[in-house]
Image (cartoon, rainbow, N blue to C red; front, side):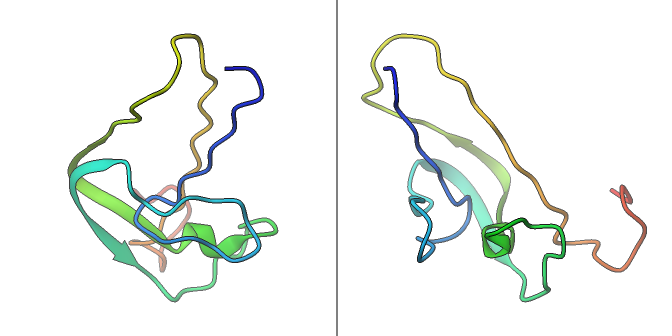
Length: 87
C-alpha cells in the first residue's frame, strides 16, 4: 500500500514523541533492556535500549499484497564495554 509506514520498537513499548508501535507482532523470544546511553542513536536513542532475542519471528497480518521496503536498525546492547564489532 502506497504511503504505508510502520515503526516497531522490538522488545520495547511505545516511545513518547515518536510514531512507533510497541513490540506486538512477535512470536517467541525474550526481551532485554539496557540503561546504557546509546551514543550514536540519532534523535531517538531510547529506541535502541531494548531488544528481542532467542528463537522468535515477526508476523504482520492484514497487509495488502504488494512489495514493501523494510529498514532494520540494530544496536549492540550486550557487549558494550568492548571494541565496535566485537560480536
